[in-house]
Image (cartoon, helix red, strand yellow):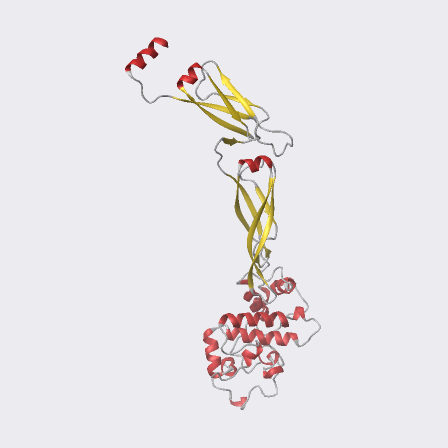
Length: 355
């Protein structure tokens, strides 16, 4: 049985809530009462401070345990006995809605100035800093309806700034909103896709935040345009389509990869096709029908000896040149002569006589 529930009440939660539920309850309350979202409501700043102090204590397991056993007053005195002039209820006459103490009076400077609180032994965290850090750990609020609030809380200004007993150095140590990161993914493509040009549909999963700060995963289908002649290593960028983080949504970059082809090897804008020849063919002549990548048939033949490693080039039958529409590289036929691994004595003698 807890001594009191006022901190739980400030977050609209219960003493049996888990740490994750405490965090979600704080986010919801902080978003609801943030001064930059309630510029015409003077009570919002006080409510924002209340839920901030509640979360600061309840999010710390040790502080929460102490609070459950002894109550808020005990924590704010730093675990010390009540001061002699405190009376039976040190909060008497200084309570706000729901019985919570007027934090601006007791913990954030109030009448008498910062540090005049009878509970000055407890140092509070800047509510704006607490607000920003609670979201930064999971990627921020960028892209949500409260992105403008989060930017202002991160140092972008705003008409409602929290004033309190926290140090000036803490208030000025606002971190600039970081730049969004870029995620790279491979995009394997066949040589035919790179030759003709296609539009690939890619299904991606991305993590987003809803209005309460809860992280969810959604599926999105991207249409990736592949330009004819695109080379491996080329990058295709999509801005703001990835996971949501503090500075915005991640950029996604697809890096083109080329799948191995059973017939052709790409060399720049050229396509190379290897033809294997037996030694007898290379010496006495041969004939082949070769198909190009666009389905054309080439009749290739040689009557005389074919040198190992030699080649023939056919202009305009290779890959499209992406920066020169209408133009293509060469189709290269390269010859590989297969030598026998062994010869009989008679074969050797015959070759000596012939050659």
